[in-house]
Amino acid sequence: MELTIHEARNVLSVTIDSTLADIKKAFRRASSLHHPDKGGNTQAMQTVTAAYELLSNAATKQAEHLERATDRAEHAKAWRELADQIRTDLEARFDIGAFTEYFSTVFGEPISLQTSEAKPHAEELEKMAMRDRSPHYATVSAEWSNKDRSKVLELSISVYLVDAHKTVEQLAGDGITYPMGVSTFFYKDGRKVKITKRDYDRTQKSDVLSKPETVFPKSKLVKHRKTTFKRADMDAALTAELGAQKSSNGNYYLPLAGGKLMTIYRTTMMRQGIWNTHGVWVDSGLVKRADKDYEGQYLSFMENEETLNIFRQVVGKEPQAALDYIRAEYDKLLAEINSK
Image 1: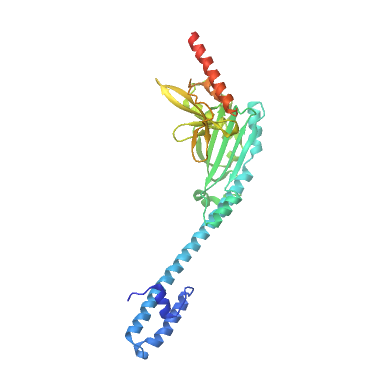
Image 2: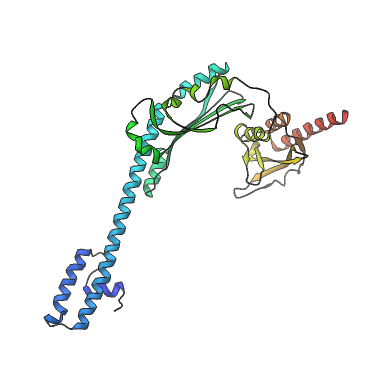
């Protein structure tokens, strides 16, 4: 016998808020009225039975769903608490002052902290709690540089919570802690300097949080051999040093005054890298497009340190001044080539 939920509730005289216990009680009451052995009829009893089976199955599934939802919520809460605990521990162990002093001593000039962040922070955890979400990582990161940003150092330490929960009892210990992913970067005059075997490594030694030389070896920092200028050097300088935005199609957008952008992109000719300017662009929020207020400018430069220095000079300039500067530098280079 096919009944709808609404019809079944009417048969047993229950409501949408009735529990499984309420439904069973209503079934017993209806059975006493409609069972053939108690003066009822078979068809009415079949209707009562069908209503009970439909509602009891639905109530059971709802109870199981609520139980699973509760389990998920409790699980998510536990992971948020773990993330908060580990983030707090990382912050406590991370001796930023030791790194700052170490870098200043190694380079013989003031190196200062530019940014530092620990995540997930309290606001993030609150938002996750509202949606019963759980984080996957706890991280701390920092960036240091000298005044002109010719030296930029970055350190990021992340803890994968799935790995960490097995060793969480060691949070208060010294020496060995939970597994951590460590990323280190050093940029000298926009060039990426290799300081460790890999940019990313895993360790359980808590020294990485308090002893700078374990992740930034002094011998590597002070050793700057002259190397061939490569695409990776330009990419690192444009993004890390100059703050250029990089699009998926290979365009780089150098920040100019007034929120304007200078677009550049890379091509190759006879295996030689070429960097091309593409005029002043504007970010409309949805897409980036050429700014019609400025004449398009398509100039090409060889991939080398000299070109990078030209790009360094245009950052922050007024758009027209940036265009004029680029044109003047291009004309100088062209004149040098023609004079040879």
